Image 1 (cartoon, one colour):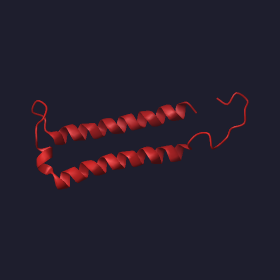
Image 2 (cartoon, helix red, strand yellow):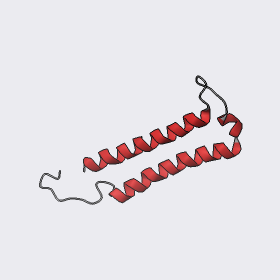
Image 3 (cartoon, one colour):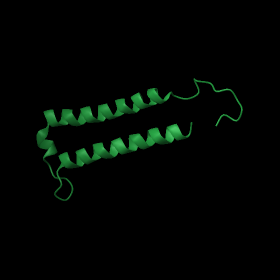
Image 4 (tube, helix red, strand yellow):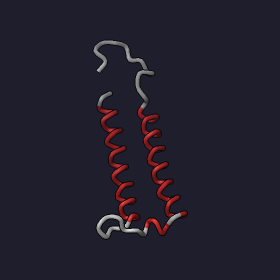
Length: 80
């Protein structure tokens, strides 16, 4: 809400700029996962928590990161 004050376009990130920034964060996370797959597949085969291997946990972490990043975008856009 602007409360009758003129809107300054430099006050907040534009939707596309925010979206691209969050997308860049996700690309870095995914790139790190893919790098781990290429460099240390043996590490991903380890089972640190109750029989579930690290590859599955990392994949679920990526899905969770995507949900969190989209929630950040949604909250940021709704507060505009």
